[in-house]
Image (cartoon, rainbow, N blue to C red; front, side, top):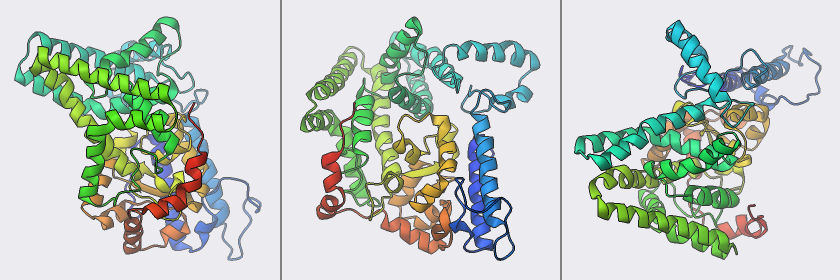
Length: 458
């Protein structure tokens, strides 16, 4: 499979998808021209097995392989299929625990827990036991640790607590990403739903989030604007491999989002959202200031350090997600965002690597992203979407700022004949072109009509 690295830690559907894409690359390199027809699992004109003029069945072989892989991936998401298993932990698949755990623990502790949690988790089709697992984790570690720091503070405990929160931050934020897009992660039964609505007001500040800002900024603003010119987190006005531009981008969000977001809603004639966004952000700041004046040391480690870390982390991640923007169609979700097939994003952060799929349908369940990609591989290819592997958003941001374009080119998973035929140097040059800053004239030309006609979020 050449330069494609398939980590054993990848989720099972990622492994299937990456091997499928690696197979496309290998066939195209061995038989130039075959990639034009590969990448589709839709209807095709040739009868199964019909030979091409050169006596091969490459096109049909590719289609049958895609159909076979898609069937396997769907089976992993289908509770009626024997291959299905619920996601219980991020770090390990349930099937692997049967051999790692003592039989008594597996049968009499883990499986009863899974059955109990299935009755609480929101999605009966996917059985998101992992959401219940993480809520238990946070309420048995983060919450009591924070309370104890206020009762009996030591610097050693404060540092250990922050290190723990640093480890939790990514997974928690992407769990909340599911929460804000899906209206919760638990079932809508009275007491369970009440807890589902209430728990973010306890755990969000412990993880660096201010109350409800993630929802208003991400759902009601970012997904409405889609990295366009009115998006406060848009990257198009920045040279996206320039350190000073990056620092300006992070700094503006870091220090001015409390003002920028309400003003955005006012400009969009949405005063209710403006008032709510301003209220929750400023009320959160007032609460933190009060706690700091009452007891500064635990407040610094419990609330302020996570807040400072997360604010920077969100923008570093968003930069990596939207740094590579096509100059011809910057308003296309396929060409203004990317797809990552990597362990940190997909194993530990609920398939956050499938950012293009998420922008195409923000309410798509996280387990459906790899299936969507393979089912629509031809479209991704024809739209010249960018796919990477063995790299996460943080490293993409760092590599761009260091101008390590050849490394990024080697991490690319080329899709379609055009990308596959490129040399590493040509891919690097293409990626560099995708970081160019857009002028205001270009923005008006590319986005002028789209900005005016974009519908309001509901």
